[in-house]
Length: 344
Image (cartoon, rainbow, N blue to C red):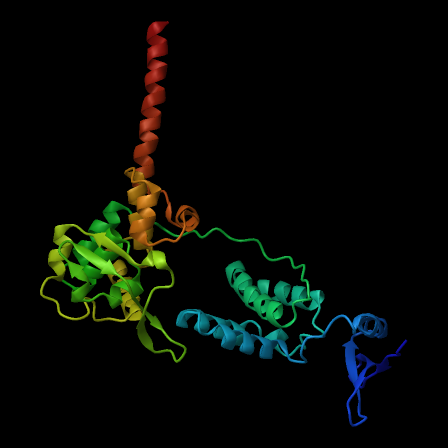
């Protein structure tokens, strides 16, 4: 059995003969580990199985991620590629230099544990998903058993009817008013709103078939939505349609980030609880659910691909509506008690 030698770095390396080329040059596979025993174990496993298996290419994890993104770039959205690149730079750098040949379950678990101390569980899971996808493509024989941080339930505030009314009074006559109406009454996302043009309005309906997003170069572009379900036609109240009459080209002249910033200032000015522009979709879906609209229609109107996301994120209880429903429950039980006392 091949014997490992200690390197100046303190690690142990074991060489195993692989093959000889036609010119007589001998080639060896190198196995490096923190202990002599582990290096020799890896070498022994390879020696026993080298005729039946092929080791992955000698590349770093960072190289594997680069190649994974390149292979997938044709089917990934620009925003997804940007997210991957950001995660690669910010969160995967600590293990990016490791060879995918030698990377171990312990390496990945240690990285996950350390990252969990600094960022939210969702960010950890997203970064881990990128790493696993790259490893699955270029080292499919590596089977990871990783414990990920528990998911945290998002605690977002869902605005009430009163909040929406005060907000609309604050932005009345402004360009932002139309954006708020489209999100709160039409369930449109901010990227969809910024991509909407006068050609998308047909009577009292609007056609949603594109979105404004950032590309890899950080430029705002118009593209098709991520999922087929995002393509939809939405009927709106006539007073909302009237707000957009006479506008040529883009209905909203701002890009999504500028829209969010303008919205934050309006919420502060209105003196209502702080919430995000995206929470207007929470409001819309919650109201539709509260008034008894079937889930299937809520999904279609909001462009959700499945009811899982809608139910877990968007079916929020609005405080005012919850109070009304609780009052119904109390009235019913009080009525029962009154009848029981009267019967006695």
